[in-house]
Length: 385
Image (cartoon, rainbow, N blue to C red; front, top):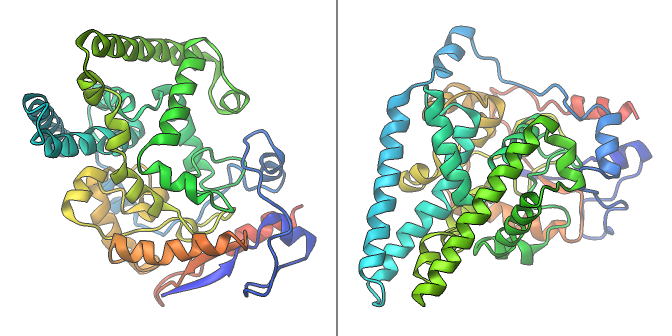
């Protein structure tokens, strides 16, 4: 079961004023500022939400060490299947190019390129997929190119995401802001907005420039590598475009670049469920993250990131250990959504409600065996203002 609440945000808690959660109230008095260099970024630091202590379910040390054990075999197997299926579907798409038979091959190729790469850059960026580090690095670089995320920028961006998960003004990876821009969210399924932003950032970085937000989380010593990668990528895309022009065909772009658009739908479908409709500015991952049971094929594409509360609590547990971790700590977590459909049934109404009430969020019920939500951490941060 899920209870609905208004988010007791730092701004309103400090002011001592609340809007009623019923439909008779007005919009929230103060809009959130998601900029990493804006008002809420400063407030997060001032109130202690930035780099704060998070709630963790207690796990015996011995069990935790076993869960964190890295192994090469599962990731080598899954990577071989992924790359093998990618090459096979790509070859089929090329062979049948010009006929309708190429369509199912491109559908498979697009998801493997434009969606499976999302979970691969993520897990290899954590350095947990393989035990052998160069394997993590190799798959990370390949997947970052496919998903159009500079490996330097996103390594540091994602570190911030885990340190300050859904903290407004600190977390760069908040996909659905409040009030939600539903048109932008819809366009994510076809990769339009984020691909445009990725290409814009690539061109700017290739010119040796960072924006003000990037300067807040990317160390100075890492920036030359960031610029170098952007220039290599720009050269690859330029060569692909030139090849397409020379051939008089978009086929090269259908294999490099465009799959990030037509194959993005699956990673967006699963990714929105991670935090959508849940609380922000809290220090308990059970309040701001969602675990969802999904089918085996989607789990393979997603590399078990459907166990998202578990991943955020213990990010150093490899993807292949997350199902076991879930079984170990589920007594302390809200019940997992039984399916993606069930997750969307609770999330979409929350988005619609947030159009009118920015502070509205879903608060999922804990089982009797769980410790209470650590809302006191949030309250202490607000009281410190």
